[in-house]
Amino acid sequence: MKYATHTLALVLAIHSALHAGSTDQLLTSGMNLPKLLAEHRDDLGLTSQQETKIKSIVEEAQAKGDSLGADLRSKQSDFEHLLQNPGTKAEAAKVALTQVLEAESSVKHLVLATLIEVRDQLTPEQLIKARQFAAPAAAKTATSESRLQEK
Image (tube, rainbow, N blue to C red; front, top):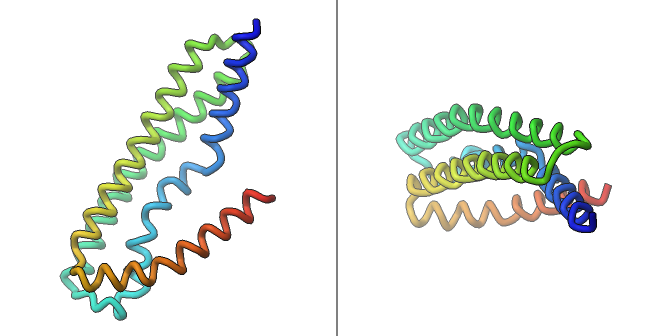
């Protein structure tokens, strides 16, 4: 009985952690660099060829992300329903959680691959400038997220 209580508490903690950020936040969090580049394209001196390539990379990632996001939301929903069912066994919850984590991992891999692909389109000088623009934006995002968590 004690083991079952600890297992349920752990599953609920994991469930809460998964929902601390929405799927949409997960999908868009890695897209800050392309957005930043678009906002500062003149300052960075992006060529039309670079802009076209970056736009293509982001559009392709968004198309893949739509499918991966739908899969992740579906698995999260299935997991939530499973947790709400008092008859759910620990093994079934574990399997469902693994599916959610695998779907989340796919999204994160897509974001990482996209960021690296976009980064590779920039010159070393453009990367230095982009990092300078990104620092205040990252601080602003962190402040906004901490305010949301306080509420």
